[in-house]
Amino acid sequence: MPITYDIETDYFYKKGIEKGMSAKDHELKYHFVVSLLENTDFDDNKIALIAGVEFDFVAKIRESLIKKSDAANQ
Image (cartoon, rainbow, N blue to C red; front, side, top):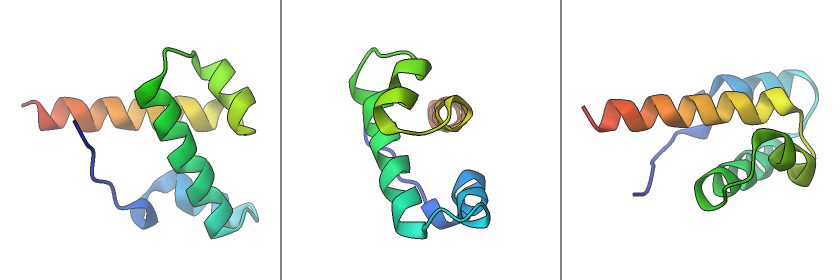
């Protein structure tokens, strides 16, 4: 089931920009992490290692996807 998401309103997107990560780099990493979360059974540590991001970045994206999925199913 595809998920539609406005990246520019995302807390982590804005946080990444504040920390100096370019908007494009952040967007690419965000979408890469989402793809790994949706298409693999890897745990958050492995995804963080593969994507070159912090564990918290992956964990928070997973949490937001679960919340969005739960909201869509109600």
